[in-house]
View (cartoon, helix red, strand yellow):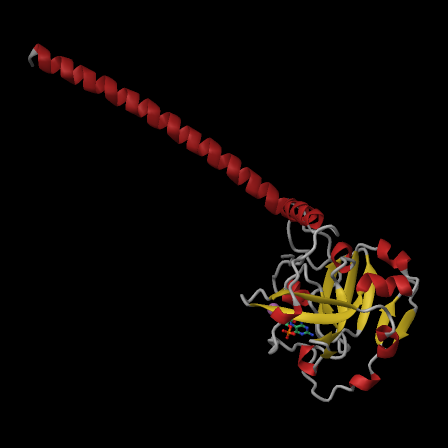
Length: 263
Ligand SMILES: Nc1nc2c(c(=O)[nH]1)N[C@H]1C(S)=C(S)[C@@H](COP(=O)(O)O)O[C@H]1N2
Ligand SMILES: [Mo]
């Protein structure tokens, strides 16, 4: 072997060693990082599931914490100073879109006999007729109604602000709860709302659409219009309202949709 060749051989052996050392370091780092990842995953899966009973239960607590933090951020963002954009009446759709009809399929539902039930915390139930509701101050709103399925439409609704109704009934104590639950009379569709959104100044219990009584398909005689939320929360044909500190059951949250469903 020439001296030149020998030098090359020695150099390449040296290089091989270096590569081996580097490979060793990378591989160890890989093991360490991977191991740490597995460890936190293991911790996550060993973490207790959120207490049973709540609709969002079934999520590991560390994940639930992140979701809850996001939610409190959005709650502040949609505080009562933040109003949804409104439009002139002339821009409101004449042919108002009808979406799903869960809980309101019955075409012969006796609207005349309908009464709104308000469950007070002490098991007492208050019943209100449509005339009583209509005697309260009326609020109208023209806004862009948005459905999670990807459509939106400028619509004109009229009714009583949820906050005004509670106020006029002298039930402000009930607003100390964290949540409001609403169900159709047959209890087949139901929504849960955080108190901030329920008492938002643009949230109304609507009995009019384009200045006329709400049609059956749109939720006669009374439906929720909560402009800070997607359509799914805007329950048609409200039968009862209740208050709680735990999340009320929510039809679409049970199907995996975001409980909050804010815009
Ligand atoms: N009772 C009841 N309310 C409901 C629904 C429903 O299926 N049943 N669908 C929701 C959805 S997904 C949307 S987008 C709106 C649609 O209201 P609209 O039919 O008046 O357009 O109602 C919401 N409220
Ligand atoms: Mo929707």
